[in-house]
Image (cartoon, rainbow, N blue to C red; front, side, top):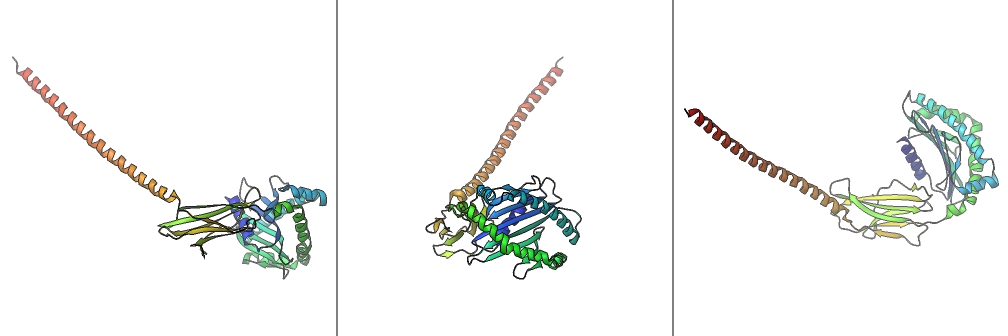
Length: 357
């Protein structure tokens, strides 16, 4: 469950981060009070594609893309060893910080998580946008303002941390150098070596389906686009060919294991609504917007039929039970009469026998 929560938090952060032309983002997660789960995890992404993975069980950074190994061999032979040592240090840092934050929140036990995201994004105007923030137990804790070069507390409990970090001028200057130099340089090199993978265009596979809605007399329409690359995509529900539905829900763009992406967008309508609906998908791999109409499936009718069949079966069983009971009563009554007749005949014979001299 906690792993799922952590992944969801990462996805929310990815979807909530400002859009950029290219991005290099690192996600770190530490846990406390959770047996059977890594105490520390780290994942790196370039343009939403996973490039490396580390956890406290293996204690070793593992490359997720072949071109990352090519980069290391050509540019930095000690990259993986250096990353491993760095993340081993981060593991201890996270352990210490979780314990410190538990004290700030007056917590002595329980399951707790600390999440951290840092990286940079290359914008369309060639400027670099940096991101660095922490979250504790799924809530914002503290973040770094790159423009003002200062940490900003999201909650009162983070104020001591904010004051301590802002007082460390060497640390602040190191963060500035990271955003303006190291992160930008690494991002440029990673894009160079991963260009074929990062720039490939794969068409989405789009499926539209329906099911009974969560409210009475409603239908839930879902449009699922999957297998597409790059990540940027626009999926919307359109009514009668021209009205875009703003009340459709989505959990955001999610990564697939093969490096592609998926997204679901769901719309709930009245079951009596006879207007036409279609899912529109706009992606860089498509020459024009893909339009997939919703055709009411047999799913709803089948669901109704299933309910009717169940009712019919239940009624049939009840009828059979009643009929069986009546037959049993009739047979039992007949058997009882026969037994009574035999008993009376026996009594008559007995009395007759006793009456003989």
